[in-house]
Length: 102
Image (cartoon, rainbow, N blue to C red; front, side, top):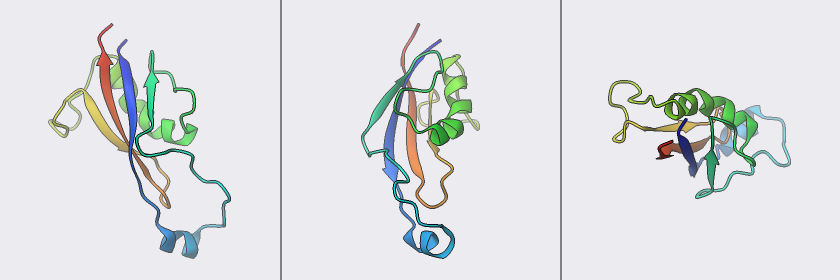
């Protein structure tokens, strides 16, 4: 399997939606822009948000197994993906790329 680098690219924060729909949360997200993780054998990296991993995992597994070219040319690098977590109040965008051939 291929090794993957997962990089936090952007964090959004929709305060209007939080005020209207969300119950207050003390600590919702520990991800930081620029933070990177390595995934070996399509395993969740230490420190990765579990909820974010659930969104990322199908793409990570495909890339780790040598696949790619999602949606017929969506990404400039066919062995990468840009995936956001499923938090509608503060989504985090992750860039997933193959970093090493095994």
